[in-house]
Each structure stands twice: as C-alpha cells, then as structure tokens.
Length: 187
Image (cartoon, rainbow, N blue to C red; front, side, top):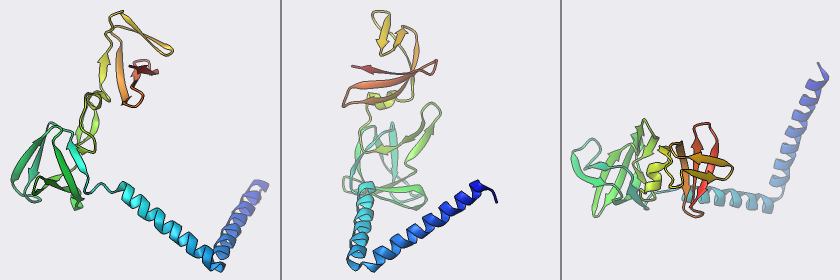
C-alpha cells in the first residue's frame, strides 16, 4: 500500500471516529439532544413554508392560459397575460389546481418550451414586464451618439447584445456581446 493511500485511509477512519464521537456526545446529553431535534424540526418547517407557493397570488406570464373544469375536462375559462389567480395546489402528473374568482380550475404543466428563450413558466409570482420579455433575447444597440460606453466595453450602433437579466433595485441591465464579453448598463 502506498503512503498516499495510507494517509487517505487514516483520514477516513479518523473522520468516521470523530462523527461517531459527536453522535454519542449528543445522545449522552439529553438536553443537547432535545435542542438538536427541535432545531432540525424548526429548520424543516421553515424550509417547507418558504418553498410552499400554495394560497399565494400568481400572474399569467404567457399570452393565454386555458383552464379546464377538471383534469382532462373541458375548457372552462381562458386567462390572458397578467391576469391573476391563486395557486391552490400542485397535483400529480404536472397538473395545477388554481382558484379564479369563486371557481376552482385546472391546467397541465406550468411551463412550455420556447425555442428562443428555453423554458418559460406559465404562471409566476410576479407580473410579466418588458424586462422579462427581453431576458434571453438578442437586441441591437441603437444609441443617438452612435456608440455607448458600458464599463470597460465600448459598443457601437448595430452591435448585437443578449440581455441576461434586469434588476429593478439598482436599475441595471446585464448583457453579453457577440464576443462573449459580459457587461452591465445602469439606467
């Protein structure tokens, strides 16, 4: 056995012994065991409530969303861009149960594939804006001066940019140029 493998094996054994000592130390102290179990339980409840989207208002982020009266049922209602609905629950086989006014309706698959933009969610927690429409799109720069300075990049009219994201808080647009250089414009 080589020296490197011996060190690796000694390290594995030491780590295993250390973990077992930690487990035995926690189990031997009942108050510490109780604190650890309560902490794990609170963490699980917190993660579940943070990721749970049911009962919250969502907005339609596609041109039209056809809602059915039951899974595999007939068409009951059509919602359009930025109409609101409440997500009741996510069901099996990618069906979604939603509430619109006083009706409980259904639709299948919360996403569709657009060749230009990839996967787009049909409903989202935020309304659809012009910035969501631009994400992932290629746009052509047209500035009145004929050029635009964005950080370390000098862009001229006619340059194609791919919009990566937009941030409302700091009012910045992140983009990528044809040469794979990333930049940011503050407006």
